Length: 126
Image (tube, rainbow, N blue to C red; front, side, top):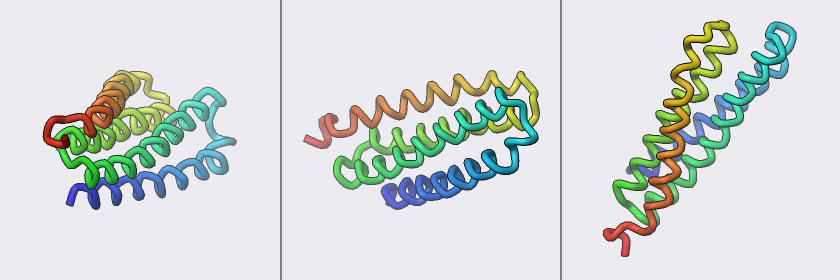
């Protein structure tokens, strides 16, 4: 079941990421300062990377079902929402205080990769 959840969320994040990328390139280019547009684009880039990572997690859940694979998916979701979401909010509002959330999202993404690394090597899978 988790493979379908992560595959669906990954696909949705990919869809939204492409839409946000187009929005940034067309609608925001004339409205945002170059550094804020660059910040927005970093959010899009990380969202798209982790949308694909969730597709890999869905596959890992079928190949090596474990709490590590599941944890990886949830960490990628939380990390993407916190990391990319805070960059979107920062670039659109200019409120610098929002930036305090970004590193928390980054840590969640790192932990997601660590859990995905562990997934094929857990005792349950051998």
